[in-house]
Length: 329
Ligand SMILES: NC(=O)c1ccc[n+]([C@@H]2O[C@H](COP(=O)([O-])OP(=O)(O)OC[C@H]3O[C@@H](n4cnc5c(N)ncnc54)[C@H](O)[C@@H]3O)[C@@H](O)[C@H]2O)c1
Image 1: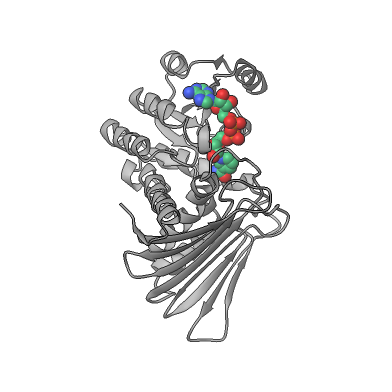
Image 2 (image 1 turned 135 degrees about the vertical axis):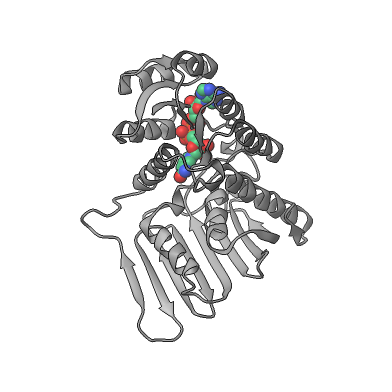
């Protein structure tokens, strides 16, 4: 498959590098509005570079496009190139958040549906062997009737661009993981706080209720530097409970009927090495599913999942503003 990357910041460069490693993909072009970034990408990967996405799509006719633009709240520049690429007949993998604007995100999902193309979001945190094994435990009924989920993620991001930057840009990941295990979320209540010196809601706490009755808690922060574990997910049901430590390092199942637990530990040889492997797994999975002709509505981490997460976050922001429980629209 011929692949192009739109947006050649640090993340677009990472996408380009990973496509080059994938035997099913051939990186054929890169694009950035910034001439320096476009040229540097073209040179680094030995492919033609463009300043205009439409010109690149017309000239190179890629099968698959990564949209790694960012913009305000890390999401305002995603919709235009995504829609251009879908309308040009390409399958698209877009960075998270799908968009910082719900109407634009809906237009992206609608365009994918109308064009019949596969549209994935880089919800990379669920593409780890530990996360996939935990999902299997849930679908195999090892947890019994699901009861609660506790999710946390904390990193340092000093960006002060928008009061809701942390809510909209960090939590597409955490809400996606929560939806992955427990399904759709129907109601949200959110409190938030500001770390010393910060003007934005840089740390937040959510209470959530899922459509199936599961209750959940989510804590997230842009105020704590990495170096320690940065993510934890605990899901419990009548049959047992699992805890995922740090995305891919370890997942432990505590069955309720026995005192013996099951632990999966990331192996030293052949295991995941670092955070970049979450991108590698996610990109390889998208390429694989497109190559296999998987129907667009069955793509893992699809556009509709990105949109659903953003709607939960919109409800959380409304809750923060109104101090009320808000139902997800
Ligand atoms: N999945 C993850 O774990 C993860 C981690 C970090 C960042 N991200 C996401 O990756 C995205 C990019 O992050 P970044 O740090 O590389 O951003 P960045 O702002 O450094 O780079 C984005 C680039 O896109 C270009 N661009 C914008 N609109 C364009 C258009 N229409 N055509 C061509 N180029 C265009 C900009 O000029 C810029 O160079 C963000 O949306 C962010 O949320 C995801």
